[in-house]
Amino acid sequence: MTEQKDYTVKLTDTNWDEEIHKESGLVVVDVWAPWCAPCRVIGPVVNELARDYSSRVKIGKLNADENIKASQLRVTGIPTILFLKNGKEVDRLIGAAPKEHLIAKIEYHLVSEGYHGQA
Image 1 (tube, helix red, strand yellow):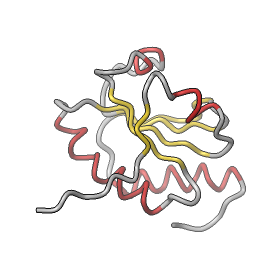
Image 2 (spheres, one colour):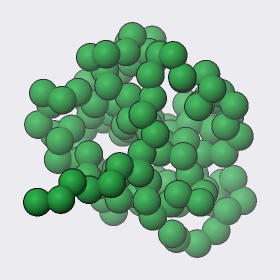
Image 3 (tube, one colour):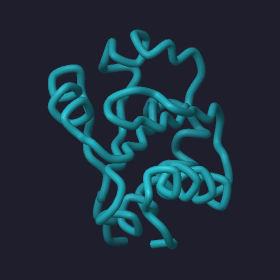
């Protein structure tokens, strides 16, 4: 079995400011942990979205066990999907949402930015 390429950005306490606050467009962050079964279910979906939206949205993953940033963001349950614009949270989903729901959220926030169309 071949390993699937990871299209997401690995986010950490160290690179958060560089990757998030300097980004002017939409950023989607999957806050997860390796032991979390729903996180393992939604992980491949998040990776597909990172591939499909690579030219319009930065999509990253933040390991809640390894980074205190998760608690600073007031993440109390995982998986949590954060939607950020200009470094500020504009939306969040808690729990493993279906791919179609994630696409709808991404599209909504892209349209509100002035981008149109699906990936």
